[in-house]
Image 1 (cartoon, rainbow, N blue to C red):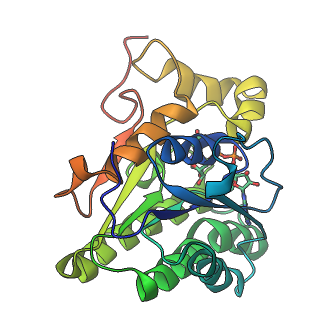
Image 2 (tube, rainbow, N blue to C red; image 1 turned 135 degrees about the horizontal axis):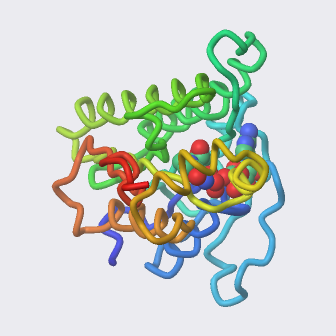
Length: 249
Ligand code: NAI
């Protein structure tokens, strides 16, 4: 799918692994240049594309980082056509168990950093540019014990609609993907150790397998492409049917 943006440079946060890494690879294959942001080093970039990758290692919870990241993108590639806010952390506590520290930690990364990056990107983006937020299917449906995470992703869905309404008239699209359970480092341990979690997600997904990072990356690449040119303010669920209905079991 061909980039339509006026500038072929994209920022992808959380690009060191998982969904972010798969997204970076998809976008590179589609012709984008990528600012790969992560608190971990982004290693193992294919030599054939490394001249189109700028790795920026930083903690996005630091309030000064989002503006620095956008400035680096513009300084290095001369502009910014796509922002993918993917970096995120999980948290497994009920509402009553969530203290201010847990709440701040999750909101700072999953929502506030994404809001700040969105704001900084909008200040430099030209008409035709695109923003994709990586929310979660938990922005439309809840499970017990994911309170701050669920709230942070619902906030991101609200931001998606808000940006669509405010910047659509200027030709900037903003959409979100809402993945169901995707097998990554974020979910591996809990899937292995928590039978209840396995029941809700693995047994509860009416599809023969769980999601893979590339399932989400493909949806993000679609939203960033000309094929999605009239899609604005949409939450694209990528969950194998988990939110659609229960399995027979
Ligand atoms: P992951 O844990 O495999 O990768 C997340 C990446 O974000 C890591 O490389 C990590 O270093 C980076 N990161 C985290 N906090 C950061 C910070 N403060 N500053 C800079 N980088 C930071 O996670 P995964 O599974 O690839 O998830 C990516 C996104 O997709 C997250 O927003 C997550 O909430 C969302 N998601 C994931 C689902 C899943 O089942 N894996 C389901 C629904 C949504």
